[in-house]
Length: 374
Image (cartoon, rainbow, N blue to C red; front, side):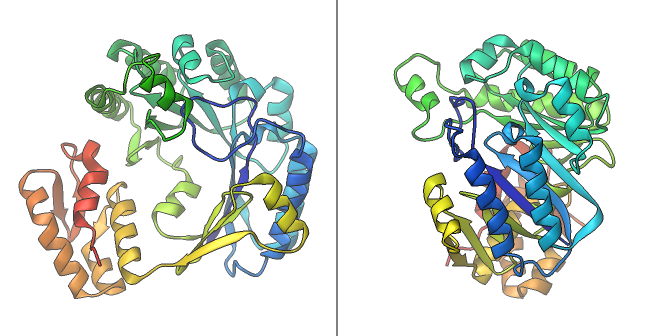
């Protein structure tokens, strides 16, 4: 099975922490949607497997009109074989989700909404320069629940000035709303973002890694008590509500990335589109794919499997390493893992390596220690 990811590179305003590709100028939105549809046509032979997930990311996909969404769905269903009941996710901002739009989306092929809440507190939203208010976040979730069963929200922890008490109130409110899936990320300072500048000039306090770790551990404990499964480092789902789209990425399935800056993977080659709306539209109009690509070596694939596998509840299978690579890789893995196992950061169970609770916040660093360097 395979997935299609569509990058919608438009936002009403720039969040201070974001380094994704987007534009706050919407005047070329119609042209870009038509370019997406044409790219879907140009690349129709790249996926030889049925499509089981369709994901609209961004940017802010909820800025699309229902007519624009209809055009994109027509291009997908005309050019690709789609399973009978695919998971179709749309990322949405609370300020876009009017009752009317929610109802319209519920009548479309979209069956899952991922809502960018980030925080239920006004001071956090203002610091991050989010376009919505805390009351809009709460109201849109309550309205969305009337029309959608499969809902996810995003939350951000480690925000300067966010106490453990306020973070707990965020978690408790999310739980009280009975949201079946929550993605939660530590606030990070990306290069060339407004947040970086504000920290450098003293307008915003620096990120406190110790606080972020405390927030993360607090979240693990809180969500575990009420039945959320931490199936990936940043993702918590009730049974039967794991994101099929994200799980496909972590388990190495094929996906096609459509739109400026979107990435694709076919098991051997990784491709990515140019991160420029105007150049992207021009190139697609001329029937040219504005892409770069890299062919992944065996070592690249091993390192990616280690990174993604350790972040998930399924861990890293030593048997899979032996089968898909060779014993040189599995022997190296076990040798490198030995120290982390002794220190209680990793556990080897049923020939599979798992991150322990003690090591969970250090997952990326532990994975890097297992990488094979050419």
